[in-house]
Image (tube, rainbow, N blue to C red):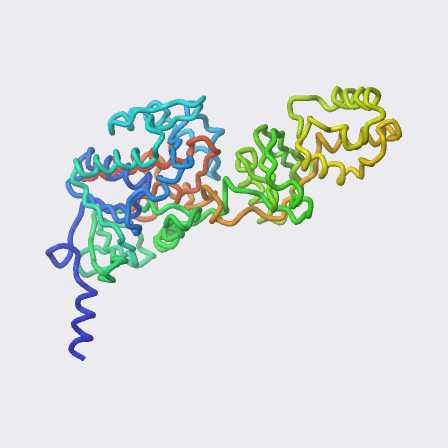
Length: 450
């Protein structure tokens, strides 16, 4: 029995040398937003900052972005590149953290940028070098970092003994008490902080540690959530033809309809897969499709495989080919125009007589095939789960935050940043821009607290 008690006491070992440590700022989540916040808090006056990360390294997800190259911002920084139910917040955020602010922040870390069109990367083309630059600055500022530290519970305490109830959220100054476990040793520690920032990410890429922990803590302090759905991810269909076109890459114009209403249209490279479609042009509208499916709406996608042409003029061109190559077979009509596997799918969908000679095929059939080329119907059955999504749409509602500081209006001293919030961007570095920017804004506000 004695050994059992001793083992339990060992696992409840306190953090540091004292019964509890008291920090100016505690940050939960060591991703892009968390590291930026820790740096900003120290630079703006916080004497002690603790950064808790449940992985065994900082920036695990960050190291994987952009295929390991890390597209961290974009020169074309506009409100329309972000989505949120709190639309006024985006304009407020971009005034606080613009494209030039992002470049200045990374210059302060010693990161030189490289441009590919509007996309901006570290000049090294290595995401890990950007993480190393952030880590170096954290060490210079003496930020205390605890890795493999999984936060198990958070309580809001008025003094060393009194605990606020949920009904009394943040009515007076208090402290945040966190219990966290070392994922390697199993030992548990307790720490208190005057200010707390939650930046634990959303649900996308759960293997990187984004498992929705912050949503639970946010709701504990009275915050509401905009239902999280996967974003920047592939779209599935139940149609069997996808097995045929798998592996094809082609330019495409994609149009998304809710009933008769056009919700989205864009051009880009389409990747045809054995389950549906992928590629940036698909990622950009995936969160809209996810929301439509959640609401059981009848969403429809139409794919144009010749986005650089007009339908009528291309129909005339096909009739010319029919006359010039009249003794060739129907399957030759699209030869050299589209990949073979894609042409075959189009022939099947249009019931096109590909084995007949072109001179035997009626013009109506040519027109029907042309229609399919420009308006190929794709019925989404699902978007991928969070394991394939690059980010989360939805999250903590911004209606309950102070826009200038990202401090909670429900609980004094509680802050939020990054993907945990109800903001998601399109492809092109916008989500990382948002993560770094909100982290910097929240960190500054925490550092300036008296």
